[in-house]
Length: 329
Image 1: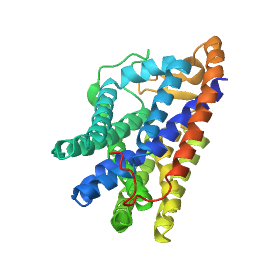
Image 2 (image 1 turned 135 degrees about the vertical axis):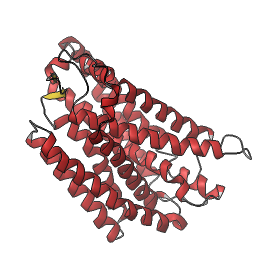
Image 3 (image 1 turned 45 degrees about the horizontal axis):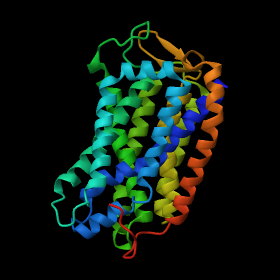
């Protein structure tokens, strides 16, 4: 039962990064496109039908984390409190700016545009720092309490992850726009996607090479996820080269989900470690059997509904944005 719910949490978390990654990527890339207001709205409008639905995956993942693994939630949030706060600030700024930017016709929109770009950037960097620290180990004492070493969260390896997430999300956002943006913007989107391929490759190579020397106790599953990430990145390049942009988008979604998948499988069943020697396993982090029984009645139907709604949304809005498209933002 514990392993099943760990898999559910992994599905929701990976789904969030696979889908919301292009939200933040488009936000960061917004200044790279024509400053004409109509073009800006069409660029953001490509996200319109998906934006809030993508965020629901994070809400669902946090709900399962709180309900199924409350001891993990407490340790993670306590050990990375600063990063959690900056992440939330980035998410709130990005989401609010997206929804408020075009609410008043004719009003200045420069501040809201800056909020979109800045919020997306802060979110991407914060996620990278956060997951990078989960790979190497949070600054916790041997008893699992926060060590108080806030600067330890910004160690060089985590910074590599922070910068790497910017590259991954920008790559994903550019490929998404190659599929969904108006035809006039497709060429620019493809060029941006190709420009972010080398930084993404650099991130994977550096993070993997560094990890080989710095990490211990890595499982075969964790190593398999690294291989999957390189295969996904190769598929992105191949899809762009063959002008199969939908294939490239799917591969970029898999690529963005790989870091979360790596965290869950890297040392399984240990799911949280610290340099002090502290380690938390899935059994230790899990809730009681009675709570699992209650969750079983509600969570699986909710996950199925989430998958169906996401599929229907993509099916209904699979065509690129054009002059007749409803611009949500």
